[in-house]
Each structure stands twice: as structure tokens, then as C-alpha cells.
Length: 105
Ligand SMILES: [Zn+2]
Image 1 (cartoon, helix red, strand yellow):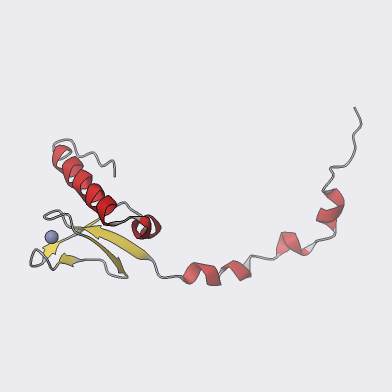
Image 2 (image 1 turned 90 degrees about the vertical axis):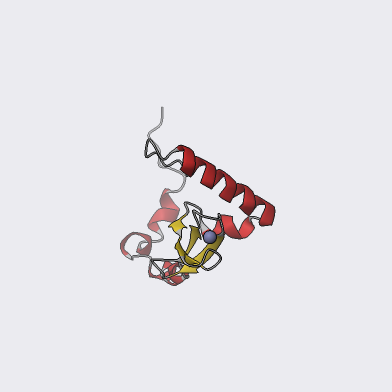
């Protein structure tokens, strides 16, 4: 067994700044708007909003919508059919989970 240096040792020492400087460059990438997905417990309509805490479903005449555990990225990649499937199963799970407050979504 030879107690040699790790292959990356030299390269690591050549970049002393890598240790101390906080990653200020990543800050700008984080300021994208935080979109949240809300779902209407009445009709299953999905909508994406930013900044708002309370959302009302205009389709149901102002029913308060609930936050869906779905990322905006996932939402944008879904087509209408998949969104329908999602809201269908969301409503189903919500209805069946009402007794034992268990949220799987
Ligand atoms: Zn609705």
C-alpha cells in the first residue's frame, strides 16, 4: 500500500479560492419567480400562480383552491390529459383520505 496523494490534490491546491468564497454567482439563478400549483377541490381545475397565498377558482365562482404538491416544472411538462389525470386522482385521494388525514400527494 502506498500512501500517495489523491490524483486531484494538485488541482485542488491550485484553486485556493474554491474554499472561502461563497457562491455569489448562483444567486441570480435563484430569483426566478416561484410558481405554485393550486387545485380546485370542487372541479379539479389546476392553475399556476406566483406570490399569491390564496387562490379562488373562477370557474366555481370563487371556491378557495388548495395547494397541490406538484412542482411548476412538472406542471408545465404535463399535457391537458395528464393534468386531468392528476386532478382526478387528487380528488379521489382527497375524498378517500378525508377520514384519516393522510396526504400522499
Ligand atoms: Zn373549481
